[in-house]
Image (cartoon, rainbow, N blue to C red):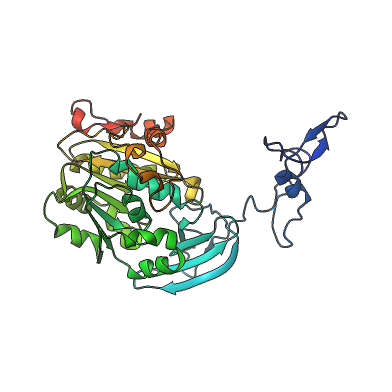
Length: 369
């Protein structure tokens, strides 16, 4: 931006408003930019003179008495934060495992926060819930048995229920309070629990998986929080080994796999472990979720040895499943085009993971294009 806060703010969408370009020619200015120009920065805001208040925040990290850095946000993404204006605190409590917060935001509706980390918002939860469920389930023919690890808000269950071929949906959630909070504040997600095919198990998922019969599930969906605290073991090799054991030949896993902008090292570690553990295909996909760190989230999809799985081209397209597009509620994000496009990766990601390709063993090769 050049001379002041007003320059460089014009977006491409033309709405109401006029302004001079300096040559006595009027050009349209969208109302959103007019509003920004007219706004007065908050009284105590510390903003650069050419930055509109609210676009950037002053870092507030400090050190405790022992000299350890205390982050104003999560240390998994130090130095950055996404601000949501809080209209009203709806719930604040602490379970055996984590702090739980629900608030009403200005732009994204109700927000669920666990240990200070945004888990979902009413506005953009569709992207995450739909992708993590349908990427695996639309990649195999007629899935019948599905396990959800985590997912206590019910959103993944809601999406699985679109698949009429499914006969059993087990869910293992460690924190019952998450379920109770979802029931009260997020009924559009909790509706997933109302499906009669759902069987709820409260407890540790790793222990649960160790006790299920070998090859029980067609698909396992790991809807975990970030790999800190109780979710740490869900990205470690022993958990992936028990997961692979619980899948039938040609069965599929879909796990949340962080942001390619922030956590390439974690993605590399997860892919490396899954290459050793699963004998079919291993792929990385991603989707845009504005309220997650960096605005994107990744998914690791894997298949066990058996009938080959082509994750990029859904063999069980959602559009051909009777009633699936509007079951419970209309699909908002996922479709078969989005499914295939999710596996198209930026060049820097291909470079970061290219060393994992193994042309001598095609069945285990990591495909990133």
